[in-house]
Length: 259
Length: 300
Image 1: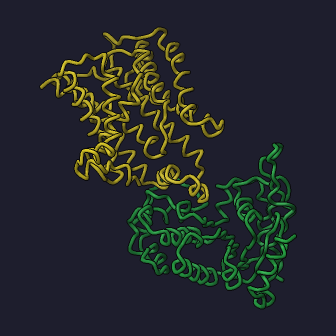
Image 2 (image 1 turned 90 degrees about the vertical axis):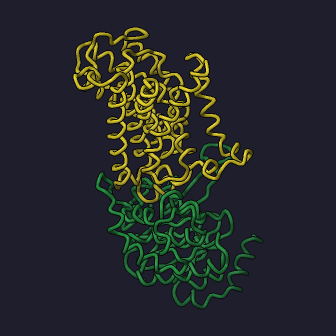
Image 3 (image 1 turned 60 degrees about the horizontal axis):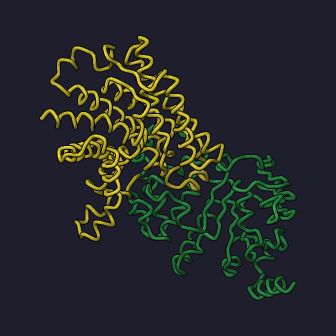
């Protein structure tokens, strides 16, 4: 394999409501190495810890023990705002990823400065418009004609496409996609997934993508992992993943339930 | 005629509070009760230092700073202390009552015979009540223009995003706690300045002068939205000032109908309640579309 992982999770334990009767260990000694250029699809049943994994990487949830190494630097103590420098993230809920009362261009302009300091210089929105136009034209849903429209007036598909563009407008070291097409209708979902895949491969982005669609998990990415009870229990990459079939995955999941 | 001029003057001076409250109520999306304490705080600080011979201009700046410090406290209680914003504001507002008594050394201070921002040749040469029109107009115009510029900066955009979608803001690297504290300091600083100017216009500061001001400030915001409908952010800031003047006219009319000034707070509350209910009432009464849409949307 490649030499050093870009992200390395070592013995991660994440507990919610620690010290109370409802204490719950969500991630249980999870280990995962992500290499540069990896496009990993993440599967797992409900409660397996997929979203917790993302919240742990992004800093929304503090870990109980373990190490989160990004380029060999431990970022476990850094806040969400600090980690935003390295991470791009798209949420499942179309409402979560954009500022509803700000326009498409204003949202993109905010994302353009992800991770850098924001001071009293004027934003020069018009200067960036041609760049934004070009970028939004990569999406086939008419987003490029809505640069001056408040995002609350966009369709769910347009909002998610915008959220995705906002996550990649400043090339992130790691892109986290949390079922970003799940709330969309099948056709829109397919379109966004294709565009996502295209941009990720063109720009050689490193990406983790949570999905519930076995087909998507098989079709996209170079690596597939399955989470269960807070651990990575299945991890295939490259040719091995190519050979994997939906039936194998289904039977794998059925076995899990029986245990 | 003089009553109309006086109403415009009062409307312009009080518009400062409406514009300040817009920052927290409309942009950060929460009601900040601190203002009921910072308004008399600004007045108390200003009048106290003026009676000790400090220049009125410097006194106004001190009023701003005092308000900003109170806003900082509310911000810290809310973001670091995790106290709900409504309660954090009420705590600081309550504490301000004692602080204001300490600063004033009693429950009121008169500025009779003292130099104020209104005592200069130019303002005194104007016809009656035009001095507050002039001071109010200049101050609210300067504040509004500065805020418009600020909101167009990278920092201002991060501030707007914080109120619009804090989760997203954080994931884009915006420190939402800092933005919230900054907004509270700026808002309460301007409220303090409003207290400084209004106490000089009135000629005194009083411990009770803060009661009900949040309702008056909100009324100017809401009246502006109800009357002018959907606007851009910059237009909305101007609409607050117009709303504040309209509010004064409504009060003037109501007083002409024979109500006493003791009824003012009741009337303010009724006016605000009616404006807030206007979308519901509008549907019931089938008012025009402009009246029903309010303009709660469209903040950028």
